[in-house]
Length: 162
Image 1 (cartoon, rainbow, N blue to C red):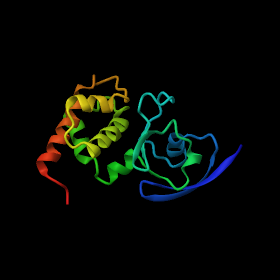
Image 2 (tube, rainbow, N blue to C red):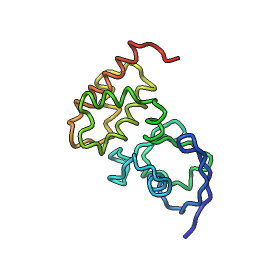
Image 3 (tube, rainbow, N blue to C red):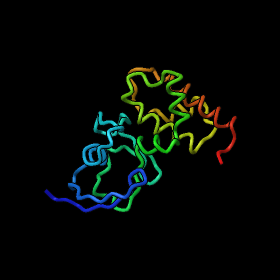
């Protein structure tokens, strides 16, 4: 089996590993690093359960080869949760019951955080469009859209963070 040596930053920590040439990022995160927050579902990039940040942009972890990530920065749901970056969004998901079974929730949160980072005043239609690549079988999306909209409104009301 061919392996590649990579060094990357995951949730602020530098990681050095030898990875199989065909190992996907999501498997590397879950199996090698024990970061189980992002889920594996379709393994074709269509459901969004494996969404993580790679060099600041959200990607599907099942579509990215770990061997290609030398020098990259990866942020997972654990990283953005532990930093407090999405605490308000998580609270809104809880308050709106937008995390019913929870399987899609990490990917939804990463995607919603991505939207709110680039658009502080998204319309309901823009929220729906941005999360449209993330499947949820429990909520019907209404509660998720409500939670993202509530978070955007509260962030605008509270002003810029210091």
